[in-house]
Image (cartoon, rainbow, N blue to C red; front, top):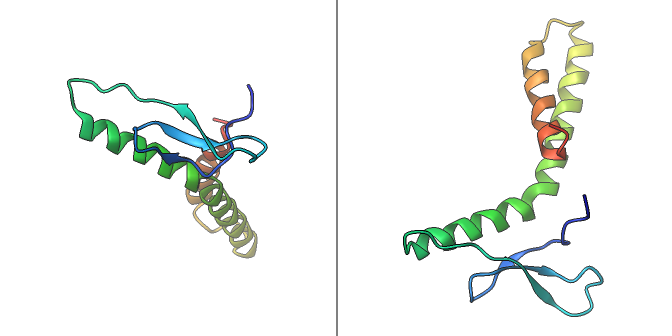
Length: 102
C-alpha cells in the first residue's frame, strides 16, 4: 500500500476532499470526491467534513490511545495484576485499529 496524502485535509468549496501535495510546494490538490446519493447534498457535505475531521485528528488520537495503553500497563504492574485486564485489552485493540493493524 502506498502512502496517504499528507495532512491537513480540507473540503473545498466544490465539495472535494483536498490535501497538500507531498512536497508541499503547490498548495492543495483534490484527492477524493464523494458521490451524492438520492440528491442528498447536505448528507454528502457532512460525510466529507466527517472524513476530513477523522483524518486530521488520527495521529493525535493514536498518540492518546498509545499513552493510555502505556498508563494502563504501568498500572497493571503496580497493582500486581489486580487491575481489570479487560480495560487494557480494549485499549490495545483500539490502538491496533488506529494503527491499521486490525
